[in-house]
Amino acid sequence: MAPPLIQARGLVKRFGDFTAVDGIDVQVRAGEAFGFLGPNGAGKSSTMRMVGCISPPSSGELRILGMDPVRDGPAIRARLGVCPQLDNLDPELTVRENLTTYARYFGIPRRVARARATELLDFVQLSERADSKVEPLSGGMKRRLTIARALVNEPDIVLLDEPTTGLDPQARHLVWERLFRLKQQGVTLVLTTHYMDEAEQLCDRLVVMDGGRIVAEGSPRALIERHSTREVVELRFAAESQEAFAGKLDGVGERVEVLPDRILVYVPDGDAAVAEVAALGLEPVNVLVRRSSLEDVFLHLTGRTLVD
Amino acid sequence: MTQLTREQARPSLPRVPALAVFEYHLIGYRRTWRAGVFSSFLLPTLAVLGFGVGVGAYIDRGVGGVSYLEWIVGGLLASTALQVAVGESTWPVFGNLQWTKIYFAQRSAPLRVNDIVAGHLAFVLFRVLTSIVAFLLVTGVLGALRSPWAVLALPVAALLTLAVAAPGFAYAAVVDTDSWLAMLSRFAVIPMTLFAGVFFPVESLPLVLRWVAYATPLWHAVDLCRAAVLGVAPQWSVAGHLCYLAVWAAAGWLLARRAFARKLVV
Ligand SMILES: Nc1ncnc2c1ncn2[C@@H]1O[C@H](COP(=O)(O)OP(=O)(O)O)[C@@H](O)[C@H]1O
Ligand SMILES: [Mg+2]
Picture 1 (cartoon, rainbow over the protein chains, first blue to last red):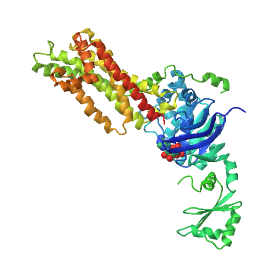
Picture 2 (picture 1 turned 45 degrees about the vertical axis):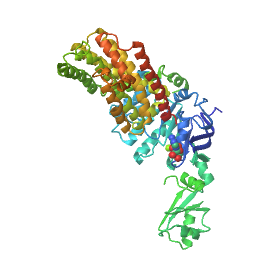
Picture 3 (picture 1 turned 30 degrees about the horizontal axis):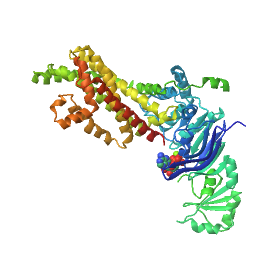
Picture 4 (picture 1 turned 90 degrees about the horizontal axis):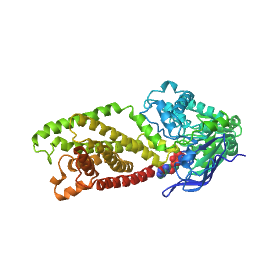
């Protein structure tokens, strides 16, 4: 098997006394779409910055493309594409100039840079805005431009830190669709997200992160099979506290989670469980049967929800 | 694309990465240079009119045997270089770190912190030198330059730029609010301009203040520029002036590099 593009062992990042990344082991192979799923503060961006060779690890081992990020930073970064959590485009330059000036940092000749910019603007559907300034662009357009900029050097690995956070649903879908296309072209993607649907759609394999640690690893499907049931029944009761009803659900389903506004019952068969609840004489105001998701995996592993 | 053509298409790193950074700053400048050009010609014109025709009329003895206009032109050259160098090395640096985060974008490319600092510093140098060329053209045409040695004001302005812009980079990278930038102008640039021999000889100052003036990088550039414009020897040794300015530039470079690394390598 080919050596992994990214290999981390016991990777740690400390800021003063605070440990943001607490000894993680990660391997990313060529052609994979790999995800870090976790809530705010889990240490995803800190990890991405170490992988992006702009933040030296505090301890542990990290190899990117077989090289040492501290010693070979520029040589590694020459082969990475980075889309940071917050866009850092130049608002004064045009859309095209943002790409051509960035290309020059990689030693790409001006003529090639211009051709590449045209090609990439077409790919992220911004050709019509090529010569307008960046400032008035919508959040989704800026995001797509940042993704295009990350592709300007034909990178071996593309790092995307929360690629769709803050975007409206339509803009998110457009970004997902482009990332999916990259994935089909065999580009290795590493992304962070706190959206379970994003992780489920894009990632072949992911790690669930919480408090700087990895709490689970696998494909979305395997994680759900391992840490959750096939289906979930969501019950909402008309009372102030859902807690009072949780006790009465004894014997229904494999496991029950009580959230402030609803109760989740983990079951192999949702409809059967709904019938059981009715037989117990309970009358929830709202009943929803759905398939388990990574959100449920996270809830089970940490006792908390991903997005609060 | 097949793996082979991909390998072939892969860019090699830029030979001088700082040049790519310089080029980026130039492209941004391309959008705003017109507004700047007007003021770089206006300022020396007004200076010649104001000081030569206006103030000069009251100082009929001149200074040390030359007319007040001829005397002050060298000082104004140096102070123009100072203004542009400080202006270009404070607000833009602060903005690139705090507002647009441009430096962080550059950091994700195969550039080192040194390349980012050097490339931007080269652009500041470019801005100062173009302003000084405009200044020399205007004052030359208006007959305010006594000697062709005046072209030596260019290398002096370049050295002064490094001596103030490099520490300026460090300062702008260290401070956390922009009110510190206004303070720099109020408590360093303006007093320096007033007392470091631009408008009157430092010998008119009390001894203590005279030594404060000698300590500023500006005075050394003023003395050199004035000597060049008048075609005479400076008050101090040329080597002494150059060394003093070089020390400021070198110390500033080290401080700027450290301040940038603190912000960009976390
Ligand atoms: N430069 C820094 N200095 C101090 N603390 C930091 C720094 N960067 C991140 N942190 C802290 O590290 C933790 C993890 O942050 P981050 O990696 O940004 O998480 P995520 O991207 O998963 O939201 C947070 O508690 C954050 O406040
Ligand atoms: Mg983050």
